[in-house]
Length: 326
Length: 209
Ligand code: B12
Image (spheres, rainbow over the protein chains, first blue to last red):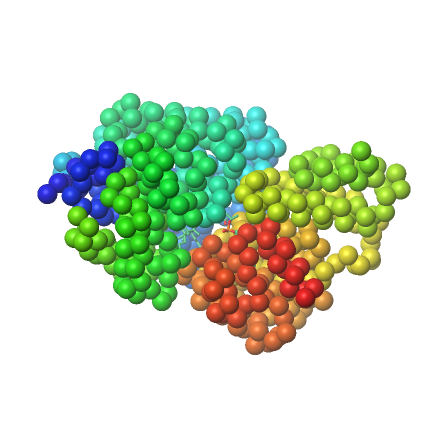
């Protein structure tokens, strides 16, 4: 039997996997690495070093950036230099201890030691300004937006250097949600102009420094962005939703990029879920998409589900499909 | 090109810095405020259709809506008290337990552009608050509820049913990523739309039917 890591490589290289890659099994996420807070425990509020306020109100399922009056870091993109100050990436050595120990404990033949980065560059622009202002700024103030993105990219590269020196990761799992379930947030032209160059630098830097595998999370539609994903060096697009016609994507781009997802929270991770419903969707996804360039997975950006048991039921269903189809 | 045509072009291309002047010029040239408003509404209809068809994207829609509202600001004093173009009031919010608002905000803009007076209740809106808002506002003809989380689909159902229990005749439209036409039907909503462009079309259809 292949190790999880070998089986993943066979799947994305068009080789001979001996089973489906089961969701996130090949990634060992090192989440202890020091970083700025973009989450906060339920019932609390935190202002991180960017000045972004994150709040998790009681009764909600997660945290959210606050953009009410008086809370936005940046009200006018043309004044970004005055208001956006990147945090230092030089964390004291003791803050790395836990992450380093975690990375050391991983059997790298079995799994990829994986750095986990969130939010991404686009997300940072809307965390700083609110989504509407951010999106409009790409169109209305392109010059200032270019400058801001360059600044955010330099920050990411500086942080990447720390990650590489401390963890020597084999893989990178990087979030940046680029769309809704039926469209990309930006037009392909805008994406190409602003986002592509930033990620060519960031992902290029990781690859030049020993990172073998780039997994990018965008749980959205994104067919129109796939050529750019390939160009920026993404090996696996995680979060790919069915609205993308995944079998078609595999036919067209398999070998250049692989697709991880195909199982919608709306369809299987909802209050009335049952193992049978999960099985039905896993079976459909596995049969439609096939054994190569595809990893069946819930589209969420972490190995979790919204309803307890759904993630595990999905993994079991995938094992069943492996037994049946391999 | 007539001044009205120019205004339409500025809405469709989202030129919010130029539109106030163009609307003033159109008024000076003798165009009626009502006609200018209708032209802008028609332009937003075009924008909505292009968005539904995937030809344009969220930012283009946002800048078009921003341009329209800058244009409307110029018309407002001229048209004060003249509610003739209004389709009525629409109450909208994201349901309890959910803080996502980008989709809701787009729908608010499109419905506003289509001629509804919008009352935006924001996010995390409990079912009773929709009912109170119907009570407190004039000429409410439609309630629109948004939900982006599978965990809050029960809250969507509760919202629809609470509104219907208090106001059986009230039209309710729902939407959001996990919502399907079947689910909308099942929870007793009158309408569903997959995106903000078609939301405006559907909403008009519901209140003029
Ligand atoms: C952007 C985003 C965020 C932003 C939201 C910023 C904001 N101000 O809204 C941030 C990063 C803050 C965020 C936070 C969270 N999110 Co979120 N988010 C998304 C994402 C990527 C896109 C949603 C979006 O804005 N789309 C763009 C708009 C334009 O599209 P739309 O919302 O679908 O709206 C359109 C239509 O649906 C329709 N429509 C919408 N409403 C209505 C209403 C009516 C009446 C009509 C007719 C039509 C209509 O018209 C709109 C315009 O065309 C989705 C993934 C996805 N693919 O949808 C996840 C997603 C919705 N989020 C998710 C989650 C889990 C969260 C968090 C819990 C994360 C966390 N752990 O902290 C928190 C939620 C906290 C809370 N209590 O709500 C999950 C939900 C999973 C589930 N079980 O359903 C999703 C599906 C991602 C995922 N698979 O993991 N999120």
